[in-house]
Image 1 (cartoon, rainbow, N blue to C red):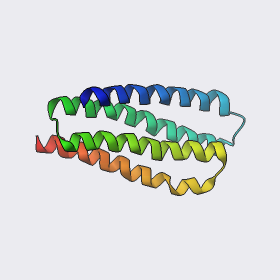
Image 2: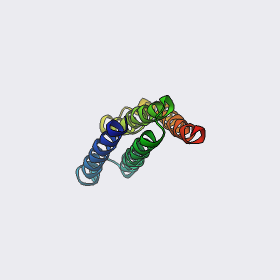
Image 3: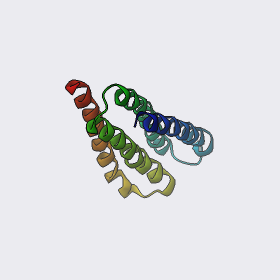
Length: 122
C-alpha cells in the first residue's frame, strides 16, 4: 500500500498545482475576491493532504495495518469532498455546496486520527 499512497500523493499534488494555477491565472478577475479566497482555501488543503499521503505511505512502509490503509483512503476521500466542494462551489455558484465542505473536513480529521492511531499502536 505504501507505493499506492506515494503515487496517490504525487498525483494529488500534481492536480493541486494545476488547480492552483488555474485559480491564480484563470479565475482572477472572473470571480469575486471572496470566491477566489474560497478557491485558494480548497487548493491549500488539497496540497496539505497530498503531502499527508506521503506520510501515510511512509507509515505504511514501517507499520502496515488496516488503520494505515484507512488513513490513506480517508485523506483521498477528504480531498475530494473538502476541496472538490469548494472548487465546485466557486465554479458553479452553487452555494449549497458549502454545507458539504465540513463533511470533507471531518473525513480529513478522521484520516489524521487513523494515522496517529497507527503510530501509537506501533
